[in-house]
Image (cartoon, rainbow, N blue to C red; front, side, top):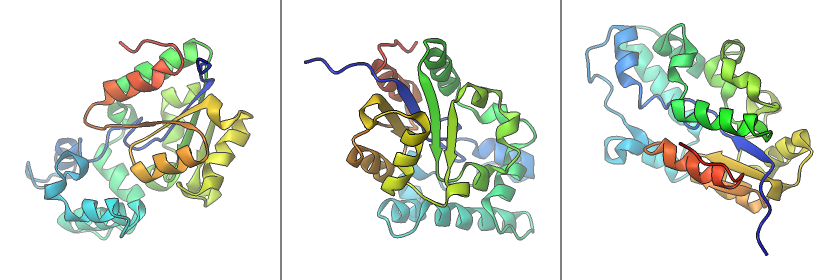
Length: 221
């Protein structure tokens, strides 16, 4: 028996909707007045360059710990003491947040919304990392039915309660929802809750969004 089409697309934010900070090192360096190629850690794009990233992937430190460490490192490079991720993001990415939204994300979100499907964000760090005013300046977020952010709930993926909270907001069953995230442990958590899942490859966003939209009978182009 053919599986029915999904009804809601549930996206992580950082890395899935927005470009990773690894991809925007050149923007960070220009904005902060650092020499080109100062920032050499590349996370999933070159794991051998980033032992701290591989430590996070092994579960030895949290994603929040990883980025707090990077924030402090970059702050020291400009002679400042940055104690939170929000400072890093605001200083590194300038005044226009739309510049760091993946064009593939904007296209996929528009396709799903225009076709009448539900949209949600399930994030561990949206307001924590980006600042409380960030989402109000992103026009693409107006297409979403709900945003569940652990900054406010205090419940981090892959805790099952995080996934159930977004399902409750959408008033849908798990199998009706496609969850997209770039972290394997978060994907495993969603799968354990019976959600459909797509592991997002930050190196190939178009392919990942194409896979996600096929659950809705949509073609990504």
